[in-house]
Amino acid sequence: MIELTDKLVRMANQIAANNRRWGSDEENIRRIRTHLWKFWTPGMRERLAESNDDRIDPLVKKAITLESPQS
Image (cartoon, rainbow, N blue to C red):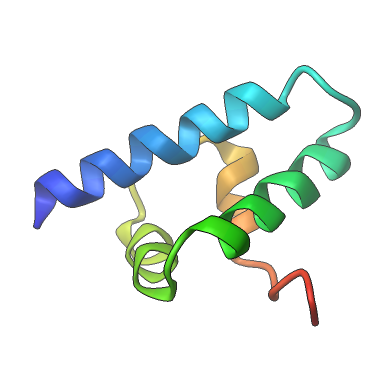
């Protein structure tokens, strides 16, 4: 189970790194959130949100705690 969390952290941080180049933090958080809700299962998002891993990019931490982009 820890290995899965490590993979999720790595993938989420890659998403943040790919988006960090474009626009403000607020825009990046929105894009990260949209990606996580569009391509990740609810279980993946939940595991990442509950992990409290210090390695998670701060933008990902903010994005994962927000409501679905459709809300």
